[in-house]
Length: 561
Image (cartoon, rainbow, N blue to C red):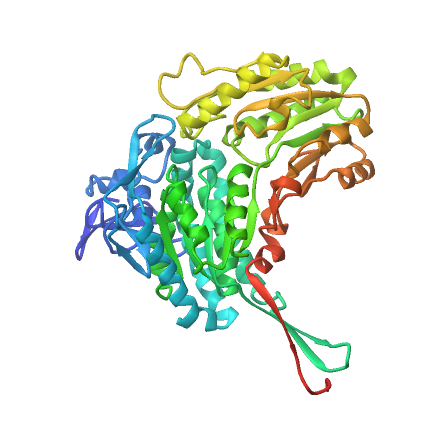
């Protein structure tokens, strides 16, 4: 149907979607089937801009929804207020004139630039969050009232699902067709989970004291929360920190990564649209030194961090100076134990495709150590190498791509150092181990498999955070468990066997926060976190909510009725 004029808007209709625009920076998009809207009447609505980007450049033309071609051609990220910080419910001018450039990791081109926060901005953010908690309405609302805000955010996440997936692919390198269905599980899924938990979690528990008095155990918000977000999964990991913190009644300062800040900016825009009270949600981007000021600030009650174990140690040390609460989701060197009865080819396809294809190994819970019976070592090595060779490295928006680039040049250099270390320490480089010859731009690195790896070697003990698999031979199941546990980490694991009873027995012997049967099966909805130096505390599930609550016992004079 041709475009027509409707008030101040041009409009187009394709049978399912109504598009209204007053220009590229003023777009509303309505899905007539679901009756949900995308974007708003204000300048720069990200959801409208990108779903309608090609149409809005030519308002008289036909409506065009997302396609692989349009995604590949639309490589900038438009934010409403990129050079401001969201503090106290307002977009404020930062104290610094500096900014962070955001690169498309496939093209190495700048796609956005955001404000860099300084020490003064940190102080303002803490002051705003502190005021909102100490004297604002948010922690004094009922939990169901707060849940209503979370439901509004869940609806907006659904509306902007494709845009969050697109930003994730540009900033972090995940293949878009992997990101697009997965992002909703993280975003609207997290907020819906905690919306529902408002009615099921026992915020007040009646009990009886040892002396027979009526008593109550109540769970109250921890206070001001700093959520430090990594660059590999910025939107999803943010959601599983912020949703429970908000439901609990905390106020939040989101510190986004300089490499991948745009999801946090989009979230701030959504919070402004929803109408959160001032200071409940604050968003800034800062370097490590300024971020440490947030951790050190006495106005902050709780820090939740996802990142490397080295950074987690530093945060824990700084927080310990003032006994601040922390949740730390840190590194991993997760084992896949392939037992003698399991098909090697099936295991290799499951492990290899998910490892190389999901963020090119830039995931803390990736299965990076493949432990196999010694007699099957060579067969497993070749099967994994075949999977690696068949991966198609390419643009995340290209339908042919099965693996994308690494997120940053620095991360690729780190991976290269580990590959050199693995070779020098005696492991056999079977395939990969270098930059692809056919990629002049982008932070690409070939899927890599090492064989005959000694579990005490550097590449088996340290988190590489890149597409490097280690195949380690074991004498028997007991030896495989010993190898699996011989690490400072304990985040994730998997046991491959057709015997479900044996799988459970072996899983109970592995010192890890999650163990999957015949696949990596981490799931934030039931709780996620690590043993040992993989972290402190849990995210997701009821434990993820409890992490943002303090327990108080009230004992009455009276006996229970």
